[in-house]
Length: 113
Length: 115
Image 1 (cartoon, helix red, strand yellow):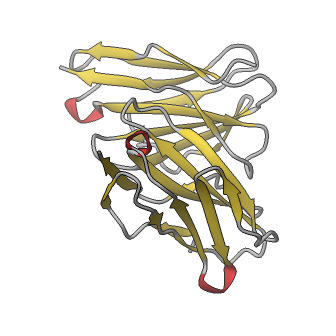
Image 2: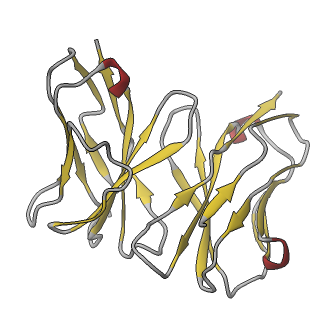
């Protein structure tokens, strides 16, 4: 059973460009979560999705950030007009139920130059 | 409030020493779940254990053991005979039945095991 897949693993964008991060959950998992981790800091929850629905986006900045988890295909975290402060590792996790353990992908390291 | 506190920001031990990582949680729910994750220097997050609020039995897995005490709202993690490969950031986390909020993470404890 393949784990959570994230791509790309590393992404470099210039200020003002768009970043699209992809996450394919584990087979059988319909709950997807996105986290951001700044260097030397803990995980900050961004958004929780369950197939086609955003359940909780309380951790996501109101502007420039959006997330989706379509019926078919991976979950996408989209950051428009990136700024240097968006440089971080973005982790995706999935679970079969929101109360249970989440399995994490390897992360996408975004660098904004 | 639903909250996880890992008061130890960084710990350094010499190889073969035992080390305990503290985790204190707050929740109003009677049914909840506690977790530990490991993040080694390579960066990935590895799930270690899940414990539900009705099961206070301690758990041992090799050199790892977990002590869950509801009376003190703690879920501490002990590594026996630590090894250099145990060097990582360890996160404690909490989830609950009510509402929609998924895992609430502590800020993590960075463990350095020195040879």
